[in-house]
Image 1 (cartoon, helix red, strand yellow):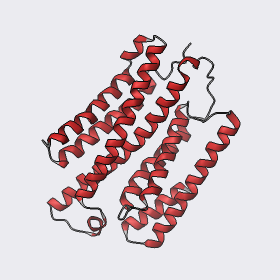
Image 2: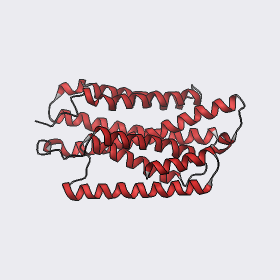
Image 3: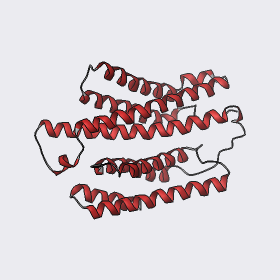
Image 4: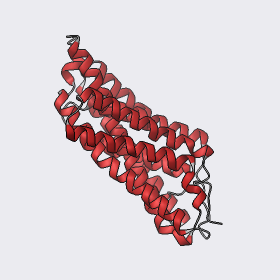
Length: 262
């Protein structure tokens, strides 16, 4: 269903086709419905919201991307944004099924920081999704700016929002994602302090995420002072997102997410 949705959106982006767009949106609604059903079934079987494993984190991330895409269908000239977002969402879904499996983690050792961990994971997921949206708009800004600078007008350029609108959406998504990710890191640090696991403060993942947040905070400081053009800010956004990806990939080398409070 997800692949079919992408194919129809791709067809519409290549050549205007309102029917293909409607069909792609329909398949996307079905995908979202199936994801909701999956979450409900997991909750029924396990007795809690499925959020504690890497599989669950990536599944909820994909779910958030699909939901944001459905919201974006109400925005004019958003076909390319939806396509790019769901290329990310579909890739995450497929790789998640190939690399990880759904499974329950015992929580009896996490009681001290149980609530903090739930909030940390939830906010990190939402922040990750919002910053993914920001990075897509940053890519589109760089693409459209290049086309306009070289006076390469075509149907793709005409179907994209203006540079001003793209910049506005990029700022908005970054403004939402940065505090969400920031608060999630604060909660992670609080969980470390609560259990007196001081060595985890120097964990690779904690450091990488801190650097990513510093990049995004710097983004807003520089933007407020109007020192650089939106071209530079778009690149800044992509650098911050690259650090977020590095932070996630560092899970394999991180002791924080292997910690069970024992």
